[in-house]
Amino acid sequence: MNKEAFEKGLKTRREVLGADYVDNSIKNADAFNMPMQELVTEYCWNEIWNRPGLDRRTRSIINLSMITALNRPHELKLHVRGAINNGLSKEDIQEVFLQAAIYCGVPAAIDSFRCAKEVFAEMEI
Image (cartoon, rainbow, N blue to C red):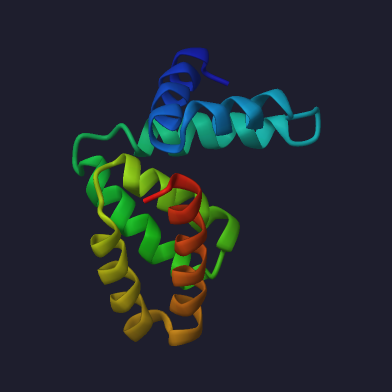
């Protein structure tokens, strides 16, 4: 693990997903899943999220689309929160899911709407 890349990724990950969630993920990691925490923090959150080519708002739109297509509700909830933190509105997220309904399938988009509503309620927005 590259400690500098991990720390940069950890900073970005906290800014997007929230420090509490990220710190709990790291704190609760054990010998089995800590390598995965290190991998996603160093590569996803540093090497990809910190690239200059796209801003965070655009990256959030892409992630919401792809996670909808993959139908991964746990990750979707995290990234809905991240999308809000990155400046997307509820209306923006709605448009992403409507677009995904056509290209990824209505059932996947319905689940995404359901997950997003839960996050909006938690965030009181």
